[in-house]
Image (cartoon, rainbow, N blue to C red; front, side, top):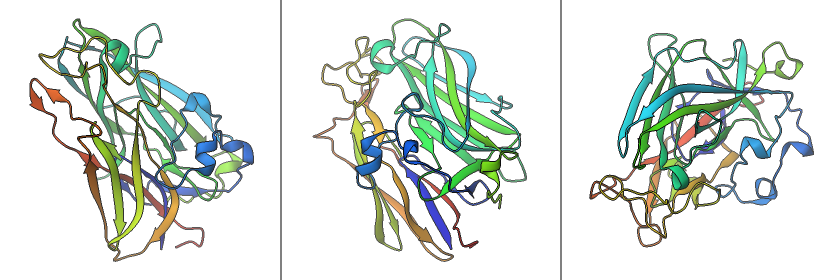
Length: 306
């Protein structure tokens, strides 16, 4: 039997080869926000790393990739074949991405027109690449260790990163992709029990996970909950009409943690719900944005060795 450790609103199903449990050494100080403690499953919002401290003796490292020049009101795509890894012989327990300028300032959508449209990390180990992580403009925090189970990604030495950026600014933007990693070295005492064995476009309301046709998690989208979202002051209607005064952008996908188990033969699927009256769709060059619904589920072996 496999324990479902975490659910986010962006998907890739990553099995126990990547997600592995670690010793339960948490303290009450590990959970930094009341929402994290008290909110129902699917309405929990992960605190940004700047609002929390590393868990279980983990280290943090920010890596800046780029710079990348995004032409005014255009899309930018780049494949990094050998990006810098945060560590070796380690388990990555948390990741967070954003965009920055050379001077270290965060490049936001509302203030600067900078969109972290999508990024996608996959392994380059073995015959078949495996997904590691994906993120979008909500710039979510991925956290795999919780109060109940501790999981981490046995981070590969070789991986590839696909980067998809967008600008609604009237001038070119020189941006760097910032990814902050939280990791535990395999040599650390906290790692002794490791076993190495939901993104939506704006307009989305919720993503629902079903296991054997039963609802197991409903991930609720939160809008404009952090600075840098909301109405853009530099929207360009000729390309990407995101400059409306009442603009709404997803900032926090709801999270479910330690919410169930799966076994061989179980079926998992998702349904995505958009409410265009509540959250109007945006358009690209006069064409309504395509709908997208992705859910990322991390699955690992339970504490019984299953």
